Structures are given as structure tokens and as C-alpha cells.
Image (tube, rainbow, N blue to C red; front, side):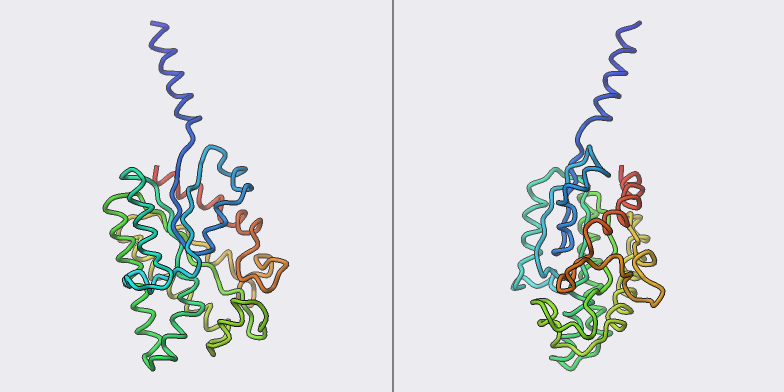
Length: 238
């Protein structure tokens, strides 16, 4: 009688101490998952990150995309077991630059470009849902201010005329559509929008790092913002 009980207790202990492997697909913002500080929040989780700098939702359907993000994501997925947990983070490059730039160059409206990015992203999420367990994290808010002309990314994005507020509003619309898509498919979605905004409706000051030329969130603040919400979402996936 004692042996079955001990065996059950040992099994529960092993289940609680087994390191969980989670795949992360995204643009450069996904690198936050490689921070050692993440271990404090998720000590028994290994995040296997496939980060493609400049990756866009808009380019997911383009086999000739400069970043080849879709191919890289597909290769990563083919190397992991079916039904793996996969976190997806895309959209900042779209709403912060690509949608505006393509609209200016082509003469086509912002609505059309936004719709194309949303369509590609939702299709990718849907495909992912058929073979794995996706979890989507909302797109970060724009951090590059209207008067920032320094740094590689800021210089590149100076080619578009959209203000920080316009880029923020577009990001909120993009996130709203993706959140609704995830709701339809019962896919966990980590919504950071409200918590990411300051009183002025733009990105909260504490999320901006000490280097104003770096368009990524401050790692420590991003972790504090994301970790508790991600923990809840992961419980749904599991």
C-alpha cells in the first residue's frame, strides 16, 4: 500500500520540477525572453527563442521577404514536437514603420496596409494553432518620439511622416484586431496595452530605457509588466 503512495508522490514531484520548454517566435523584441532575469519569474521554464530582427506580420506571406522570417519560423517549428507551446510576438515593425512606409511609397491607404498585416498575422496564428499551442503577446507601443533623429532605427523611421501618437493609435488598433482573432480561436492573449500607456496616451516613461536611441522597452520594466500576465496565460495553455 505504501509503495503506490510513494510512487504517486515521486511522480508529482517530478512533474513539478520538470523543466518546461517553450518556443518563442518574434522580432527583436522577443529577445527579452533571453534575459537571465526571466529565470526569477519562470525558474522551471526554458525559452527557446527564434528572434528575427525586422520581422513583420506584413511579410509573412512573402517568400522573398528580406528577413525570411516565415522560413526561419517554419524551420524552428519543424524541429520541435507537435503540440509545443509557442509564444508569438510580432507587429511593432509593421505599426511603427512598414505600414506607413508602404502606404507612402505605393499611394495606397493605411487601412489597406493595416488590413494586409492583420490578415497575414491571423493566418499565421491560425496555422500555428492547428499543430501547436500558441500564445500571443500584444505588440509593444512605439517609443521613438517625433523629435528623435538619432540612432539607426530612428534614422530609418524618419522616412515616414506619422507622429508617435498616430503610430500608437495604429498599434492599439492592430492589437485589438489580433486580440479578437485570438478570442475566436480560444488562443491565450497577453494584453499589455493599457499597462503600457502613460497619462498622455503614449508609451509610459518607465518602459523607455536609459538609451533613447534604443527603441526596445527597458528589459527590467518589460519583465515586471509581462511576467505576471504571462504566468496566468501559460496556465490556460497548460
